[in-house]
Image (tube, rainbow, N blue to C red; front, side, top):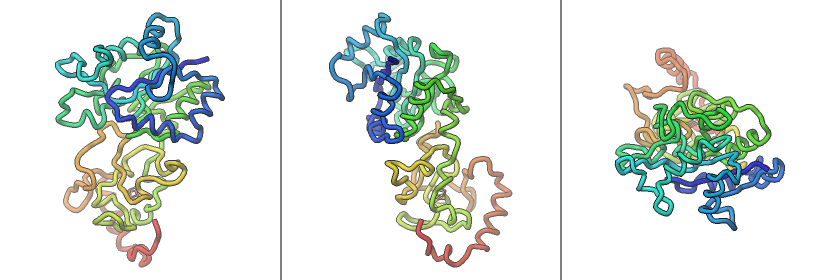
Length: 310
Ligand code: SF4
């Protein structure tokens, strides 16, 4: 029975809450189907103490098949890790000890993957990710680190990670399916589409019909800081709780699966002249300008008048 150990470091428990919302597949579904054993989770397991589990893992009495880390890794102060400890032991040291024993190591959420919110400037606690510090390879374990099965850290990015993305990754590992990672260490099969794809405001984006304030029906890319066209995540192709997403609820995408999250101001689109500084992924600025001018001129009245429900 493969063991899963889930440890929280500098975390808000958002990914644990997300895990509980998974329904396709659900946590209990994958535990039963793949005969997985949740050996330790700070909120979901009972019986053994963490100290007992840790001692068993380090002594080799229990196998460590999947190690999930939720939260950023606090290196400070002065590299000691003493801002985040368990019974006086820096958690970064516990992670360093357990990681080489694990068949797979999963960074649950953007904090564990890249440092996330905690690593945003001025980063007084010296937070970082497991194998990246924001966009720079390295992090706590270093870019060359590999798990017992020869894989780098699998970054289940998101703030929090999407519920079903978490359970799908666990199910793929349990089923022995190959996991190809993208350049940011994310499972390519689950981070291959943009939040923009599937957004119900797409027609407004096409015709450059923008909202200047929250609560409207238009696109939020041009003034309200939506990062949907640059952010690879399943949010609009697999809705949260099967029901909604940020953009469907009228909130711009903050780009939380990207290694540079949080970047810049939220709810604001930085611009060069009148054009967003950051364009949709892969788009050439000169061509975008020409296309947008034509698109705006061609916008049908029903779109200009925002008659279409997003
Ligand atoms: S609101 Fe965001 S995700 Fe939706 S169409 Fe506009 S840019 Fe794309």
